[in-house]
Image (cartoon, rainbow, N blue to C red; front, side, top):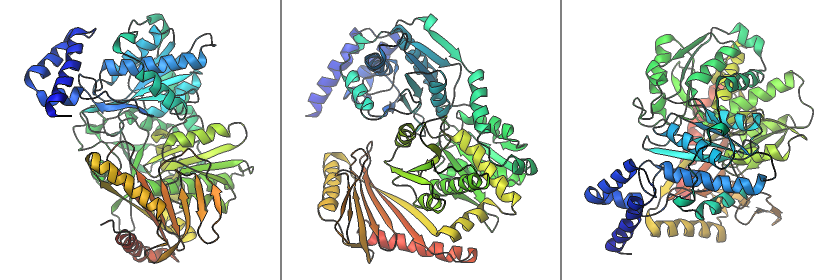
Length: 580
């Protein structure tokens, strides 16, 4: 399509917004784009914002390709239509709605609640911003059939998003995600019922906070250690987001008295003025908190992302320097501590299990194996961890689960990753370690001595445009049809193909089914216990390569040497695969 054809098509779509049932402010902004900003007009209207399997996410503004009350309205009407098809037999369908600190989040949340009520549904709307995991908790508490949280997680400030939840408090999965998308695709703006029924909207807030925080306090496994270490100094920052109220409250409930704040980042602000990106995976997001920790003499730093479902951690190493933990390390520390205490407290009944995603460290599995605890590997995405919990509900007990991208969950009263409970448990783990004469860093090295030093890395290769997408697809095809026999001199012993849903034992040729949803992901496991995962991004023109390697650590004094050796090993693997 030529540029002129695109512009003609865009102008036709924009003209409909000038003539349709849109508010005057929206029409004025569309008119301004048509007259003064052709490039932004094209970006705003050249396609419709896609309602994907996780919901909506996009830049805010007017137009069909932007987050605004009309695209949010169509998403909500599609969700309502699908809920009616599934739960129409109930006296009333109930939906919980929450939102984060981003610009327009309150407006989008009110729009969502209004449309649900207009469709005859009971809407529970939080009075002010709340964490994503509390939305999951509210869905379950009120016995809702659905839920919505307005958030774009850690995306830049110009973005917002819309995530849909099912009746178990988890993000929608197959087949519901695709079916909601299909309902969305049937709609025009005229199909959306914006006429709210205020009698069906209930404002909720502090009473749910109290119940949620009580549940988190109930997760505690070492209250006596916390009592002895109650003055341990902790620095926490919400990065301007929703954790500002509940993380400090959860820490206080647990018994921690010395929690320090970064005052500038306690301010709820969708412009995130103190960070380049409100992403706890990025070290610079924790810079102000680490400086605060140095100032007050704290040993533990924690930061949650804007919707408080993920947590980043910084601890002191043996040289007294702050280092950042990655998601695998945090998950390993928590899994080790929680399982250790379940053993000590004689809570195990042989019916417990943990869950991790396939790209997360194998260390979590080794910890579970030692204690004969069942484990599950699932596709990337916390919704798949929640699905395993739902599958075994009432038959087995979920202990904890995590993913490498900084998400973790303890217990099953929430069905999404939860930075609130994770922060409380990280602090408790630090108190328990200190009670035993160790720092979190010492504890991490102890785990490595016991189970082996696991190290992970990730590289993204970007291929832009149509040709880039084709190149990415071809890379997967080549690896699938012509898999390597060895990587970095170590033989491939197992190949897992999640698109073909099978695992191949390269030594015997035995093929075993993989009982997970199909996904275009490949994994190679080598004789030296390395793991390479190849996964194209579902939202960006990228292909991701995850690397996991393992080394033997005989004592903690060897850590720095073996750690450097593993860095070199990952580099050698990347070179052997000709990725750099």
